[in-house]
Image 1 (cartoon, one colour):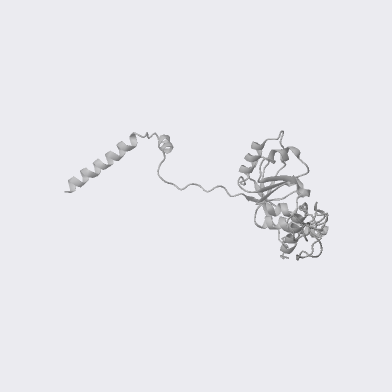
Image 2: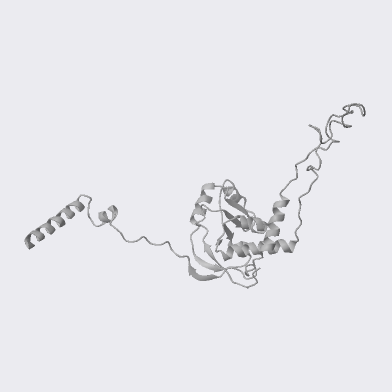
Length: 263
């Protein structure tokens, strides 16, 4: 458990996905607390609560048949039997098998769930996997618009949890065909959902307070190293593809004449 109080910053984006200045995250929500045992307990309870317990077997009292003794009690030389539906007979009942009344539910205290969620958000902020975006507004459900937004955010091939400021059905429907993008209100996100994702994208209004800019700008993409002139570069300088071989031939001829004069 990390008890150090830390102030985190996050990369901020405009509504269209373009990067802008980084912002400081609220200290009350992002104080650096990452409690691993609590996160493990909360996620384990969440996954256990998804189990329905439908597996069910029949005991010897539920199996059809076996209404009389298979043979008489004495005189056959065989062991006495009362029913062919006993567990050691083929087609008999099952002993200690699963029943449909099993309940896998695990209850976790509310404060423990809140601590697990807070720890998960701090873990994503520590990894710089938490992105802040302005209000997302879509006029109609469109999957291509959501894919384009994820590409501009740099998370096109990663699992994304998009937390909106309240319920936004249009945004949800725009992402429901994408298996790696999960949209839900910020208040509904659990520790499991946060840890499932590789990147958490949060609407700025969902955090409940204005975010102050730190003045730092997202680093731009590295420029390409200078190399040989491309066809477009030569064309910009007025050099055609036919002129380049002629220049090389002229340089070779001049080099040959100079070597002949020295001889």
